[in-house]
Amino acid sequence: MSNLGKFVKTETGFKGTIKTMALDLTDVRFEKEQGPKRTEDSPDYIVYVDGAQVGAGWAKVSNGKGKKPYISALIDDPSMERPLNFTLFATTPDGSKQDALWSRPKANCGAGRPRENGGAGLRQVLSALRPGPIPGATDRAA
Picture 1: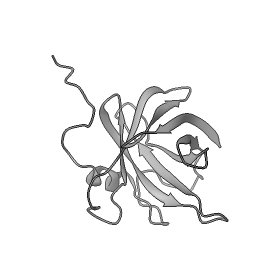
Picture 2: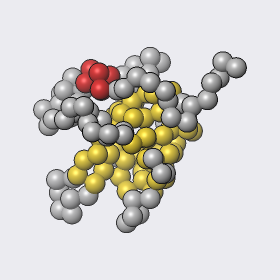
Picture 3: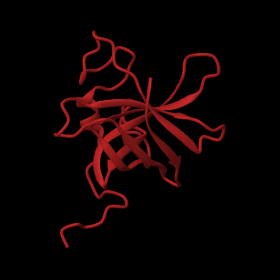
Picture 4: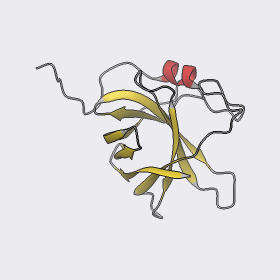
């Protein structure tokens, strides 16, 4: 497993960075979705990078001993060959600090299609994202 970045809890979700050999994202925000979920597969968080909506995150609980909460996340962009799937895990008991962890998917795991464990594929992610104003974004056209 590789550590892609660090996140801290905010009033509305999490804020942090993701850094790989190809990505250097310094303003990544997970904003908690407001109101009831539209469907069971709808995300719990919308992911923004530099004010642009680029993905989603789902709150989950581990199956192993301890039943630890985590966020399963996906970001995608036209400049990327395929979506980046990663997980936010708490590094402090209160969950105020999180690490973004990634591991290479198994060879038989198809990107962009529903996973057998009930997770959403890219098509479900894009259909679940809500259009509208981006929280915290500023008008750059001015």
